[in-house]
Image (tube, rainbow, N blue to C red; front, side, top):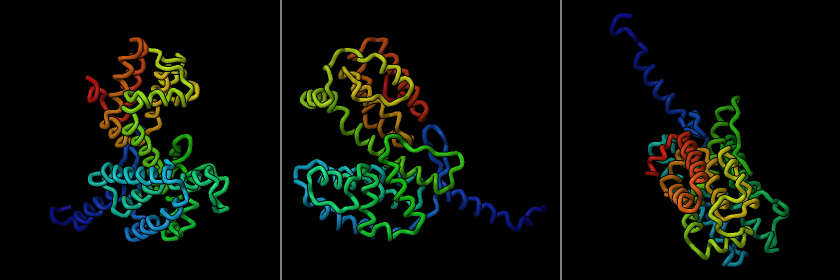
Length: 324
């Protein structure tokens, strides 16, 4: 076509740019996944939901003893999670404002069902719908429904809220199927983020305490029926489990070193590479590797270090960034 005669050239370029903004590419378990970036609700709807939770939740937890760890402790955890999600997924991530707001809301409410569990254990009055529910994701969805939060949202946003909150509390991360729809991928992403943020809180908040705080170390040894620090991974089979990238069963740990290896093995359930980077940046992985270097025989240390290096590499993280 002669120069200047391409009537739709500029229009095509503009539309292509807009289409690119409708998805966000995210690295999940070493795979690049395009996540739907269509707004599922309005920011005003999310703000209204936040206002209801801020009003209703303190009333729900009021009967719990003030020193119960799941009374205000979960509120603090929720606040830290929201701040961390804002830092990791705001700005250059490229999420539209509406979906970022929805992600922040899910991050703030994902554990409120723990309060129902706590009230049940304390033999406090509990609504019939919540009695006998052992999964805190399910309890959270029920509580959000009872205070009409879910009714504020369009069907797709409500489906995302319910599914991602339920999925976050499972033993294992959900799987993304090849035939997943755009909404399926977005729901999967939300669930993975919330699960991973719990891992970030655990690594960033507990690693150095478990490693270096003697009273806490003594407490963990007692709580988990361990035989103390032995200078080795006991049972030795746990190293092979770690090398296979699998979770280590905590009740099978005999030595404290094995207990801390099962702690490090939580990295295998981290899905979102941005969160893995935040865990690395917290210094937790470096502290754990230093502990194993100081405590274990060279052969055990080498196998743990090699698997850690390879797994972080799958997330695009060079262990040289944290280990000289």
